[in-house]
Length: 97
Image (tube, rainbow, N blue to C red; front, side, top):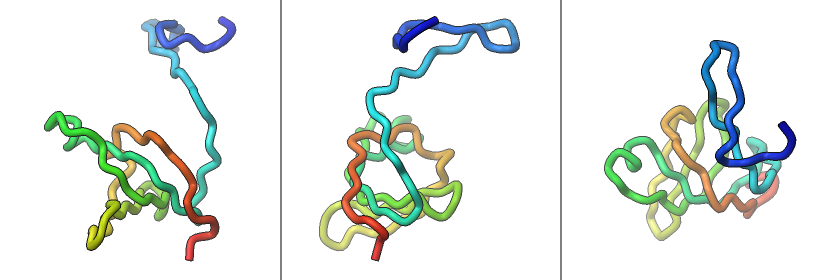
């Protein structure tokens, strides 16, 4: 199979099929930089809510530190397993001070 198609399927080791990921952009993400993104958690998805705009740092390993956009927004550390979707990812600060 050549190329990436959102509807294509490829066999997995168990004998079934799994969807192929459609990639629109590749962004270098590291734990020192701060990003602006829309984050959607499992809880928000289950409640039918959209993602929240936030400043994001992918640190500590296995977690995401999130600060909502707006005055007085709290800082939260969320397990990466709780995050369903990260969109509109844009680096806003390099080296993070």
